[in-house]
Image 1 (spheres, rainbow, N blue to C red):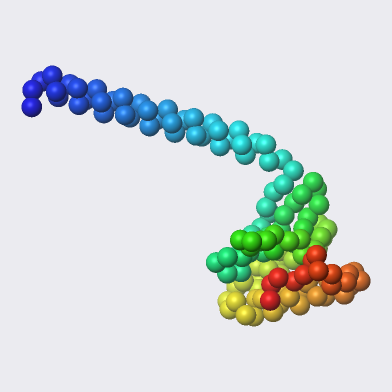
Image 2 (cartoon, rainbow, N blue to C red; image 1 turned 90 degrees about the vertical axis):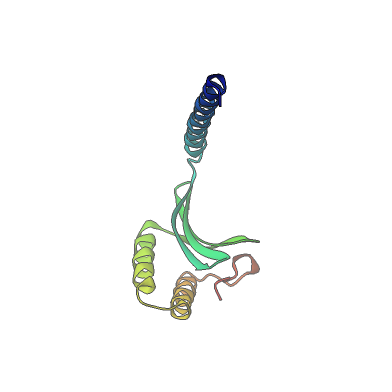
Length: 132
């Protein structure tokens, strides 16, 4: 290996490192720019039900919703107010601790049914319970 080829190798490594750092900086800038645009929709809490679906509490324009998220479909299960949100998140934390999937699914289904009954909501096809 000659001295000239050694310097060429060093120059190539330096240029490659510069390109990597520049790409990293540009991607960080673009990520912060894109995250700043999402002002009206936020996912407050997300709980995986299985590998293809999850339950999420989502804030959309100062309204809170319980949503079912899956690969092929996303649905609003119910609308929550701030008091219900605090109670629901607290009960979800208790439900997750030490229980298996079937028990947690049953309790969530009961809470949704109780909420619907208390608010005289009918079971229409647009808000079907995709938990079970």
